[in-house]
Amino acid sequence: MLKTIIASWAVRFSVIVIVVIVGLFFVFQAFYKSTTVFSFNNDDAATVVTDEPVPTGPTLEERIAQAQERSQEVRGVYMTALVASSVNGAGKTKRDRIVDLIATTELNAVVIDVKEVAGSQLNENLVSFVQSLKKQGIWTIARVPLMRDSSEVQTHSDWYLQRTDGRPWADALGHYWLDPAQPEVATYLSTFAKNVIDAGFDEIQTDYIRYPSDGNLRSIASTSLPENKFTVIDTFSRDFVGALKEYKPEIIVSTDLFGYIATLKKDNTIGQRLEDLGKHFDYISLMLYPSHFYAGFSVPADAARNLPALSYGYGVDPSFDVVARPYQVIYRSTLAAQDVVATSSGKALMRPFLQDFNLSFDRNRGIVYGSERVRAQIDGAQDAGASGWLLWNASNNYTEQALQQ
Image 1: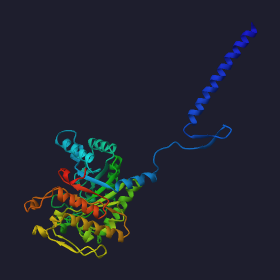
Image 2 (image 1 turned 90 degrees about the vertical axis):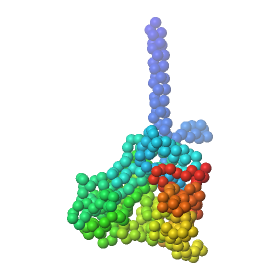
Image 3 (image 1 turned 135 degrees about the horizontal axis):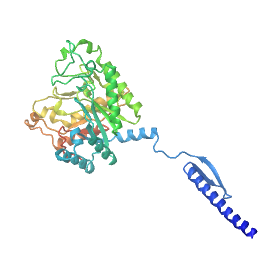
Image 4 (image 1 turned 60 degrees about the vertical axis):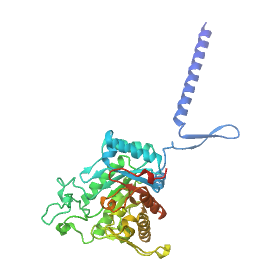
């Protein structure tokens, strides 16, 4: 009887030991499965080769390379914050129309306002829309106007350009302008841009990175006007882009400039110099709207490319009017800007804004921007070697017939 009991307990003990060993084996495997690599030698004996970390996605270097590659062939359109935030009504209809255009044509990107003169335009609906675009593989660009910003004038009036009487200066439209020489201004704007990055945008595109060009400029106090505006804008640009790249190294940062900067190369009044900005930004989007060349358009002969000198007026016979020469304006401006950046050891690539709208002054003269003239601009940009292009229409109505399917 005693032997039987002992034998029975021995069997039970053996079963328990086996269960514990098997359990420990599976726990051991679950713990090491993702980090340990096994190989088998010729004797079929399992041996540990090495420990490898669990894959965590692309490395930082890979993310930077991917962003640079994707951003080089951007073909986009502009969208207001109101349209981007709309969840019903006419705004939603317009938004859906643009998304459909991107899905059915060569378009692959959208530029969205996130800030204007009154301050931030970020909201939950806009951020949700951006996330939906990213899921579709659409490149998302946040347009961030900088110095024309009235949102802080009540709480931080000392951040602004000052009048000779000590009050903040305003332009002809009553908009106040931040002083780019103020360290607090740089901190405020870079902090805002970092919040935009956190919202999920692929690219930050600055606008109004300059001193004002309109209004009673003589009433600005001399203490608000540096001896060299170029130096101030250059330093601000360097520090602003550097802060964003430090925050997220793979973020792409671009800027909008007046179109005439391509051929004039600089504007002392506003402090923009192409050779300076080309060293800091990834892309420069010259606003090359032919209808906005109010002083006409002129470029010298380009012997290296065997191109003739060009000179067009504004408001003259359409045969000689700059507005009626979309291809030439875009093509020669892009070439000129690329040459300036290249000769000054800059890194920025050109991605111009193009005109997809009509001014009544031009329409009344018989110069209409339909599919032919919009396409001519695209061809001019591409023939000049631009790294993509962007279409501008303030009402967000775009000419589908100008786009390749």
